[in-house]
Image (cartoon, rainbow, N blue to C red; front, side, top):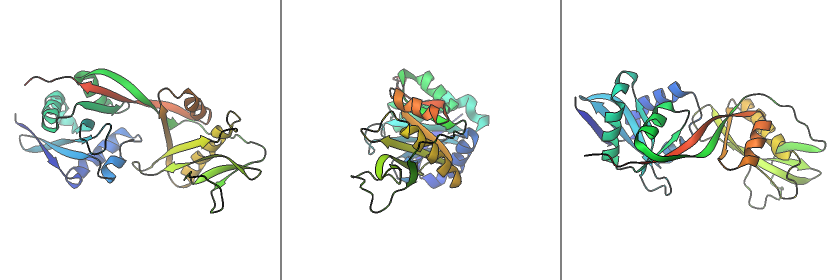
Length: 248
């Protein structure tokens, strides 16, 4: 059996990547790396048959290529996963793996080949619909006259002409997902505005034909509680590990 790995363009593995996204049915948080040219892609062959692909990007600097963040094999060839992964790692010389825990295949490689794995972020999916209301609070799109002070958020919560919270939807993720972000201005925190704007951004996403999703730092308990109160639930974790030295 001859395993080969070769760096290639995105078009050469696009069909395989479509299968990867279809199989997993989740928001893939590194999707934009491909669209923005932040990643290299590699094609895998066994006995000259196309069997899968992998992707590498920079864990700290975008120009680096030190981290494997995608690894996919067609089902009939997954029994060779360890051998293909070793060949891939030796060719691309990555020293890290970054994986979503809901990507079971790459997460298996992470725990098989890495030391000191840890979670960096929590991933959320929508779970139920809420109907919070705050007297005097209006959710709306920002206007040209709103004093945003450098905040480029597209949506906001207005209370008596004051902007108390802002946020938006990042659409550079795999279709149909939209990633929610938000912030509450100082002096208006712990009054329910964060939960309210997340709720309304979820509704906005669905109206656009998108599925809302979210994530937060593993240590950010306040954001986690806000997202859960607004109807999200934990669906996975963003994991990272150092690849141990491979023999040969």
